[in-house]
Image (cartoon, one colour):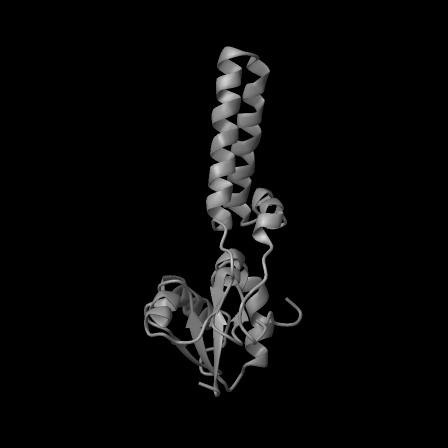
Length: 176
């Protein structure tokens, strides 16, 4: 596998939880912006696209073609993704303590904010409903733009900052 570069397209929290040693992280949500520079540095190389189960890696492969790198890279998708990689007993760098994935934390936080502000609006102060409006607006903005401020905030929390096991550091491509 020394001649193959693994390009992991999962989101930050998934990659941080576990990833192939030496893999390059370019999340699918930022692929169109981040991938061109990375792909340019990999021209002529064999690239293995990795995600959780294979679906997002396939989408990344389609985006690579749209970005004009068809024929410049030997691209393949690792069928079954990191789940299959792990099942086969291949090497992984695994975070020692795994918190809930960031997007589940966002769902939990947003749901609790909406529920509590709605109940406060009904039983205590009608102005509390504006918190629900704010959260709904933030989630809509995140859906439209791909930027979720709540996810960024939660990623900085202490329970999401843990050390990893393994000897090889993960690589984030330069300029990304």
